[in-house]
Amino acid sequence: MNAVGKVEKYHAVEKEYDFTDADFRMIANLVCDEYGISLQESKKPLVYSRLARRVRDLRLGSFREYCNLLQDPTGNKENTYLLSALTTNVTHFFREKHHFEQLRNEVLPPIIERARNGACVRLWSAACSTGQEAYCLANTVLDICPEAHRLDLKILASDIDPMVLKTAKRGEYPKDQLDAIDGTTHTNMISEVDPQGNSFLIREELRDLITFAELNLINAWPMRRPFDVIMCRNTAIYFDKATQTKLWSRFAETLVPDGCLMIGHSERLSGDAVDQFRSIGVTAYQKLH
Image 1: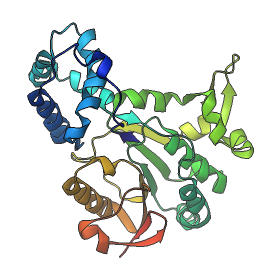
Image 2: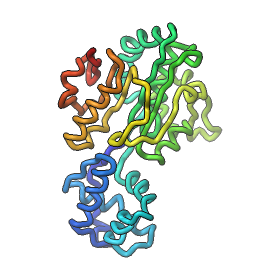
Image 3: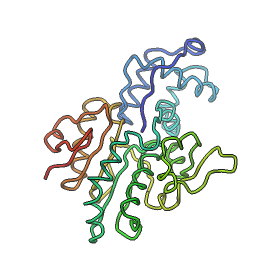
Image 4: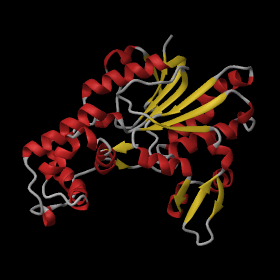
């Protein structure tokens, strides 16, 4: 899940470049307008520490030159680097495990039964980051429905950052992430561990259920079919209140009747969406008819 990180120590290199309030405001306004990310004044040290290396790597003389690059129409590619620098992809396998238990025991069984009867089923891992959430969702589906590949059942996994999507599509992760996967699930999810034991690969059967795509949640969505489940956890908290409220309503519009929305432990529904859902668990909601 993309998240603006905590303030980092930067005093050791603070004077390497001049970083004015105007520079900060320009960057903060850009990421708010383009990505919906709200950067408060308190994030100025973080922005400096994250971007000073980029200014150095580009051989620029100041943050003002970097801001000029961001504003130059020919420098749009730099926005990708800016986004990656200012977001921290904090995620792991089976994060907030209660959601996957609820999916397995309550939410997915009737949805899968509909798929077995010929219905089209679509699940969405929004803000999927490096892909762990999407693979856990696919594993949960296959545990309940081993024949899922023969049904009209697909998982969309999207993120705004093309760099993290490369990792997600590859499905290869460092060995230390195995700690979050228990023994039985390990067998179902992992196809191989590299000979040196430094990384592992997700099974092709899980990868085949998922389509990874770059998507900015605050822009237009190209999807035509409604979703039965949407997971968007620990992402909206980094948007301003107005953007959060609009996002919840858009999710409601994109879900089938009785569809399920799961959000992060620090997030709460707001605006019209409060009346469009009922709570069915910890930060889990069902769309009302």
